[in-house]
Image (cartoon, rainbow over all chains, first blue to last red; front, top):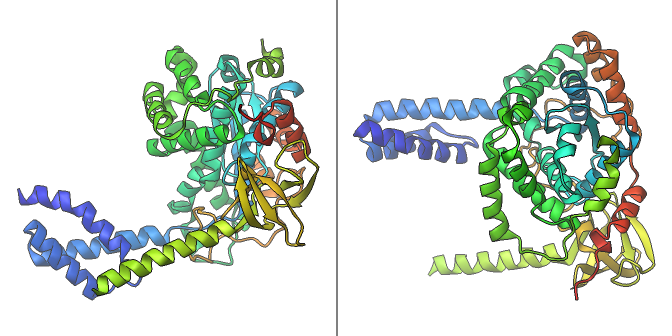
Length: 302
Length: 166
């Protein structure tokens, strides 16, 4: 019983420690150990040890955070772009669709929380339905996905989701908190450009996240909501991303292997977006889908 | 009693903070149009990102603002934010960290960027195919200007060009 209580109390205890971490004194650890011991029935000495370990763990996590400036973020994004073409397919040789996707993407990006970054969008030749974003504003969308999208509002929602990953620095945050940069944190003078191995390790970590492991599922749901907001702010129908997720739910899994591997189940995304839309965004009959312009912009893909 | 005083002080402080936040807004997009009237068809002049605008009133989706030179006009609400430039809630905010990767290079404001040397090296070291390198270069070269995006919004009746609901 007391072990169960310990497990229940531990997250709370760690959170409290994290909150107090600035200059965490041994006195504070002692106080927490006493409270923890009373709350859980643990031996006070054992509780103090848990406290010390927890404080060290949180401190170690904090020390591993290495800020990455925008020029390096862009260089990482460019390098991930190289791998994106390598893995998914070549740059689509249709200037019309490339320009169209860049216009929709930039229209959405201007309303984002990081509007000054220069976003680049590329259509990639691939039958797979997928879209992904690398740090620095590099966003990719496959011809397979564009063929499944019905209108510009859906495209704006999909791109909004990717822009949200960039503006919230989701993938970049993983690198900044990872161990691959720990050596640099201790050597301020060592810039990443003078250390190609560390740079390559950072890029490979992003590749692993984007192409294999995926981000934390909660970050995907967050990007769904924020991306929906971005597209809606431009004036598109707010259900664009939700409607496209419904399409995803109904396509054969064989067309979306990478997307399913790295994202939550489309049915769950639809359900969460339905909840979000009903609570946060009022239906707006004047909001646009711009289906005809979408058909025109992507006509060479048909 | 002291507790109530503290709560009252906190409420006053919060209210004051809110008022300050609403008094001034900053241009969020790369440029924002300041119009003579709250209509997308009104005459406009452009002001750059980060410009502080004093809010005089808010009507529909427009703020009536005063520019630093004293002139007045209307700006579409999406083009501005109440957060001061570079004070956003990014992952770097509040870390206080100054060590690590910080490079005093020019910002990436140029509209056409080539591949950075780090990315060129990465391509060489990882044996990236010439076709993929070409794709990444083409991705860099295709840049749409804020004027192009503005024309695109106007054509689609989006953003500030949205038709007013009746």
